[in-house]
Amino acid sequence: MPAAGNKHRRTILILSGSFVLLLVVGVLGVCYGSSSISPIDLWALMAGGETKGSAGTAQAIIVNIRLPRVLGAVLAGAALAVAGAIIQAVLNNPLASPNIIGVNTGAGVAVLITAALFPALGYLLPVAAFVGALAAALIILAISVGGGVSKLTLVLAGIAISTVFTAGMNTILIVYPDAYVGSGTFLVGGLSGLTLHKLLGPAGYIIVALVLALFQGRTLNIITLGDVTAQSLGMRVALRRFFLIVLAAMLAGAAVSFAGLLGFVGLIVPHVVRFMLGSDNRLVLPASALIGASFVTLCDLLARVVFAPYELPVGILMAFIGGPFFILLIVRYRRSNFE
Image 1 (cartoon, rainbow, N blue to C red):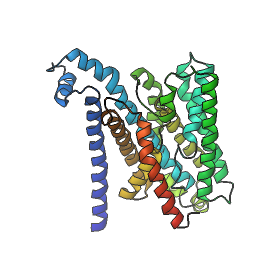
Image 2: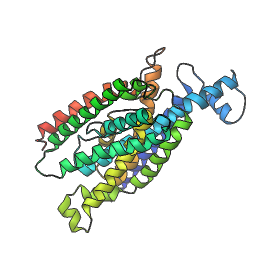
Image 3: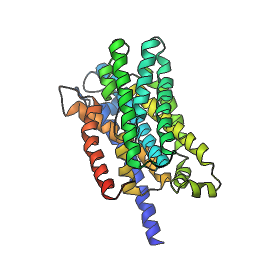
Image 4: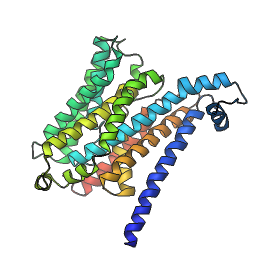
């Protein structure tokens, strides 16, 4: 009993700390950048009071630039982290994540096709991204359930699929160079130029999918026990697995539609969460949402501040972090006869 009580307190502490961390990095993200706004001035503006500087300029910066960017980072981070946790559990593969197995690039190529062929229908981008992400996820799912495929081989297949989709995106941008404004940032992942209007549609998809996903922890726990065990417990495994993949595709696709090809969030964050809380997906999913949101927001802040007066797309910074992390995971699991 004491051990169980300690674990419960530790869980509450970690989840509460993750929420506080998100609030802190969110405030810092709104306050700091190429021009800084003190937290005191931010509070004064929120309270409807005056600031020491130009209230109008500060308010314009917050409302038109900083707030959409922070909200975009929070939504994209939470969506990609939860999508990664779901994919890793469904495929029972700790090396899987939306960017590694081609889900992000599937969404990306669908976004660029839609932007090139239907430039006036920007509201279709989240839908197109979902369709592309789902197509890529279903290809990988079909490969995984075919039998006789090792986990490392599945990851290599996902990388190959991602390479094909990347070639497709580059081809579209060569044929239709004006198809997507800011395509360079889109290909590496970035949040510059984001507005509240652009966020409105994807935010709806992400919020709905996150709410549904947070109730799937028990289902994921059962699926990770294996198909035979899950079926013996009365679960329709194929149907549940498909539903979970749809949720992951909706989350990843919606994030890609406005944040571009942000990589490694869905790989790094679930591993960090499982290290802190264990493998119970009832805890992994909410913690991944909180820590993923904080991670992307913090990385975006660092990409703006550390390299000032230049601004680095957040996707580049995350690639510098995620690449070595992925290599370490491969080495770790190869040493443990990862099959």
